[in-house]
Length: 69
Image (spheres, rainbow, N blue to C red):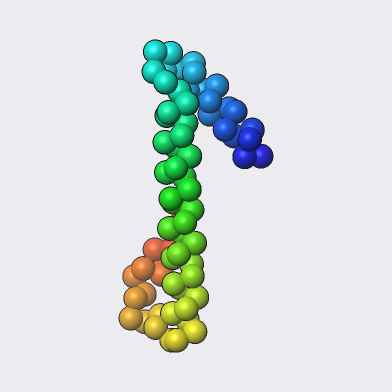
């Protein structure tokens, strides 16, 4: 699945940015997506830890944003 997404993204960037280096742009997008994934994983871990230690009420706005997203 991941290779297909990268392939389609590369094809799209080749067609849209004819004069630019499409591989650099695809690399940037992949890095941003990985950073978002790591941030989400960290938020979920933090939420689980806070539930264990009963800290949910102290940071409820953060967790409400996670649940609605």
